[in-house]
Length: 549
Image (cartoon, rainbow, N blue to C red; front, side, top):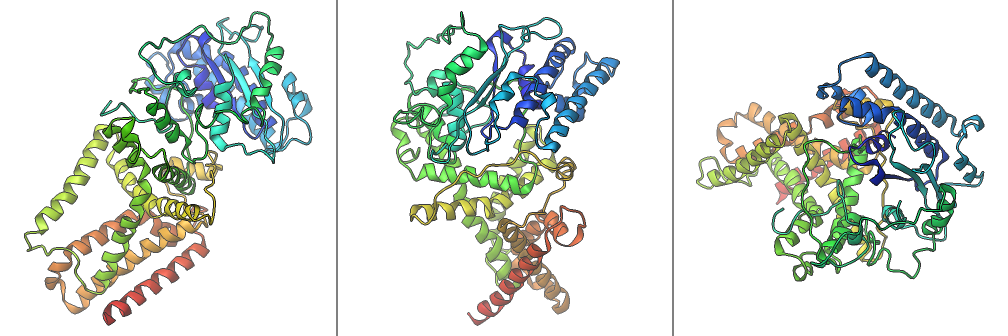
């Protein structure tokens, strides 16, 4: 709801702004929350306009100390009053959510009549409700200024009809009427604005002129009439035997529907450009736990690799339609998953060979040592400078290195496996929904930048096992140097020791989750014991195997 409110308060002519909330589950709890948000908006929008509030997401503004950036807003009675109103709204919504249903006395909006006792998330009628219309008494705020139109949309879902996941949901919104580099920026999903014609599958032409006046004829239609008029657009069968999902709207059949759609738009001659505004637009939410982040990255990389292996592949077929630079740009994302095997190789082979006192890299005294180290230093120095220049901190950059390592050995690895299984017909690629809501303790850990390791997912077994193998191998080498006095003879192993030490440093939060933490975010005992067993077995077998070789 904070995201909805930030969009409603966006500094844009309200008569040209419509906010659609797509609720695939068709939940009356979400509808109730939206009703509450629309009531609060009548106070929030005038408050934002009066004090030039930035950002306009109330959750970010009140709880992230962002109000300090608004020079026109002192800590005043108005600020406190508005925060109290927002918290009262939150409490009302949380109370209803805790009850699991909306009490009858709170069902003041006529739209609640659409919900019946047999409605479930995967089987329900289409529900389209205009909560704020421009033609009724609820269309203005407390300062008598026009509010943007707000529409709740829950498309029809039936067990016997495939709903095409998020792409299907987005296409319903597209179809509801009225309501720089080599080849410009890539479209890979987030923070994108589109011309409707581009999403409707039209090819770009130089004579194209935007028709700003087209839309639904509202001269005689009330909100109730309009809701019924467009309801069939959200039905399960509306897109049957049409080009929706193939040539029109977001494309179906891929877990990365945004990237596939972006390619299709560019293939039809449309160009994109960056709009980097200093002032933030509306704010949304993202995954706050490591597990959900890994699942999201798995879906992205899985879909990207699927595109690369399809007839839409930018590298194989895109050069005929877009410039080579853009083909390469898209292919970087398409081939994310391909990083998994090289990364796993570097994380396992050097430490295991170090454990067996076998050198893999140039000696410090070798002339090949200098270019080898220079490449490593140059790459990471450039990455750090770029990160700092973009406004990040050193800690933020370091955490990014950690995340990329964890993502490559889990999300990317699983993406490759799933694509291989799908290719041979052993399984089908699925759209894994990423949860954006966490419990209070998980959210608190996220805000404190503490990693949540409480998942029993097999991804965490891989993460823990790789971390432990590097720790065991580094510990074994250090003990050998101490006990045998071999430190002066380890010139050939210097790079492996440094590399293994770097991996251990990156995995410090993992070791804390395995052995030190006592809170709910610690690693489950099942994951800890499994990882310990596998890591010890791998180290023992490598010592015997390499010694025999």
